[in-house]
Image (cartoon, rainbow, N blue to C red; front, side, top):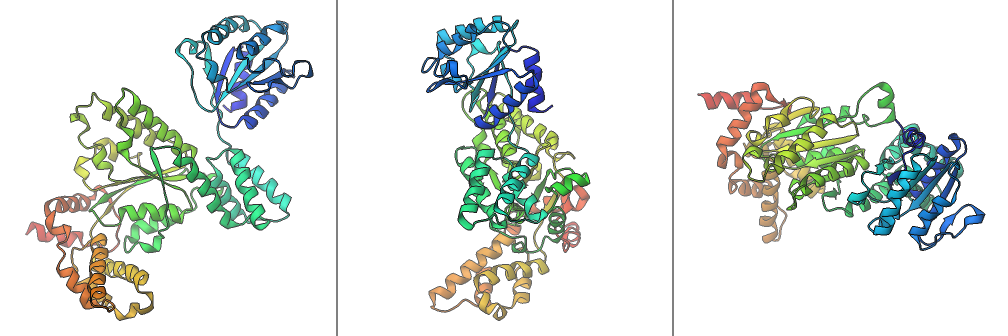
Length: 504
């Protein structure tokens, strides 16, 4: 049911007090005016604290700076007069005993009259004594069709044209913003270059960053990594590239559902977090990072409230990528935690949302310890796929060295023996390879020369890889993946031979 349909139903059912939490006053008032016309051209009266009532010449300014008088105005009209009274920012006065009592008295009378009070506020703030007479009606942010109409109108005004692909990408990136913010962003683009260009998607993402900064639950993470920055993991990269257009309107018309997300399980330092960043950058989606620890608060019920707020914020900014790093640490041993069940309730709310969400929020969760994850997290339907990210093979280590060295020394990349480096670093993870290169650079810098292949090998000989220090945990993970519990992220893997050596 759309907002207009639900609002008209409440009007016909004579709900006396409707509370609409939204920052989009202009847009919601236009929608209410349309509903009023369809309901027999009902009169619409708008009040705010500074200007009083507006619109009707006979009542202009009535109730200025007097919220109680604004409610008394409702009684002045004949009982048979059908009207809608919009009260802006009226939530600020609901704690006043006289205002609260007046609203409760009015609600009794309005049940038998074709009149309705509508409170517009940026957030929900209803005192306990008014909850019984109030009805909260959500006003959604503009959808893809509304945004497309507005973007096309502005494009037509500039006399230019955009390809369907660019238009889809622009519309998709604008989702989660109010119409007023969308107009400001596009007006800024037109004022800068005289027209809207594909690069203006970055302006939209910056506007979304402003929204995220106002909260302390999610972080807007700048993602500049490319898919090509990931060495190896060919199966995972192919899977991601096939879904690059799955958030477009063309995918919806084809019948494809929004991708749900990925659970990346594997050894530390093998590129799981890098993959989350590369996904967001490649799909031109904002990357939101959730620190699960921020969901938990000291007050009773506050943790559950923060979880719901996180979900609402992520869905408001959709389409987006929600990155949850090391989710195994957040929900490990939830049954044994002595927090009166808070962790269990937060976990239940979270996995229920994972299973039932319809919004285009692509969740990328990473985990190092599969044993610590509750079984419910691994059930089909929470994520599109579970990938195991293991230690890179020799071929993949060569690719990882190539990625880093092409960034550090692009002018003399050919002077490094990538094959030898890959061969001499068995069991090294991607993070350990990066640290090896940093150590080699320190060796070269301390001797006032550029670092060489020999410096890299010397640095590697001084590093003890995690595959040796946490051998039992890594062997368990590799056995778990080899048993078919997860899809392998790498096309070139040496799991089988490694397990055979372990069994000998």
